[in-house]
Length: 95
Image 1 (cartoon, one colour):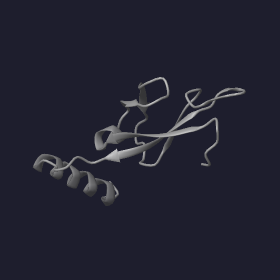
Image 2 (cartoon, rainbow, N blue to C red):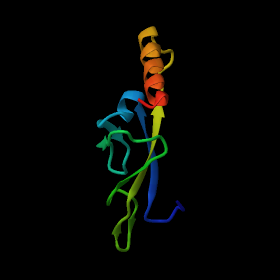
Image 3 (cartoon, rainbow, N blue to C red):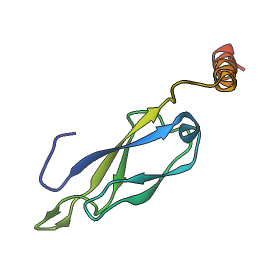
């Protein structure tokens, strides 16, 4: 997406649990942080639009686009590793 004077790009971090959501996360805006709901099964790289939260322009405020990034915690606990393996097995087994 090309930059323009009315659009403002930003990013927001969600975890593996967030991506299976829905989850609420804090997002930066020009007026300060706001709470944004990340829809269930949102993939990394998905763009979320916050209407009217971008740069001001001659026709009102533009939009803020949030790039969703998924953060995997490090180090994973043994329980989290086992759950991740089980999820992978279920996902790729066609079940």
